[in-house]
Image (cartoon, rainbow, N blue to C red; front, top):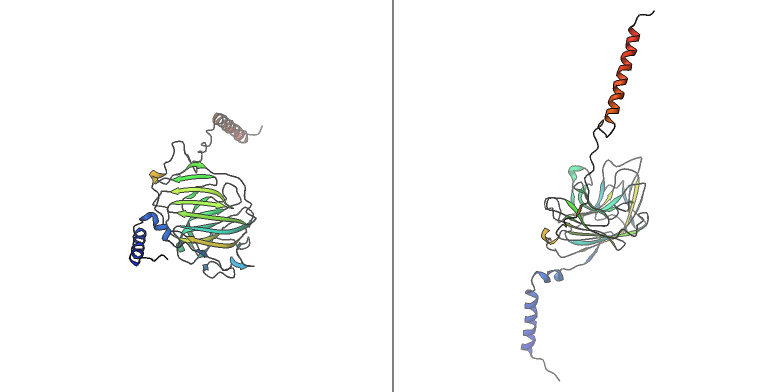
Length: 301
């Protein structure tokens, strides 16, 4: 029979405790309780706030609707009333019925009562019938498009969104069918996925505009009538990660802007080969009018 030594056992426990306590920042994430929270109870909108004329629960599904008879004056949102999020994984299933309109998932968003009821600003994982826009990263009421679908992008400290790589553009996703949207954010690193396919990968280095904490919300969009359906909304809060420095994500010299500047329209009347012709035409018209007036003034013979 083997008899344990109480002193050795105590020393072993003490040593293990010291190792855990001295693990440094690398061991911090392991000590964080990454529990999955169910944000929608499947019955009613307890824990959420929004316009009751537009949001309801039907057959265990959140439904947001707008109509042509009573259009929205501005984009509005169903806002989660729980604690703000920092680093997290959010998953939700969505389906969109619309004629050209869109929806989206807001995260780390800021409440904006100054802009109207049920309004937020900030990061959005877009749900859009256009292939290039579905799953993109958009800054609502802010910088606009940060990364279109299929882009790896870096936002410089000066605020320039630059494409530094590519992601697959296939398969296409039918927004009229149920799709699973997943958002993973760690520090200033953002990743969106639709049905398990990564749609954007972004590092945001613009300190003046980025948000590191905020609320979660779902969007209904002004414009044509639309309906968005939402179910199975879950959140896993992650241990706070360090913000990635710009030096760690250098922008290649051949990187292209996410939003290239639009070409300037040619000044009217100065198009190539058109100016002189227009001038001569006007001159001819002037002479014709002068002759006509002269005939009117001439005495009848």
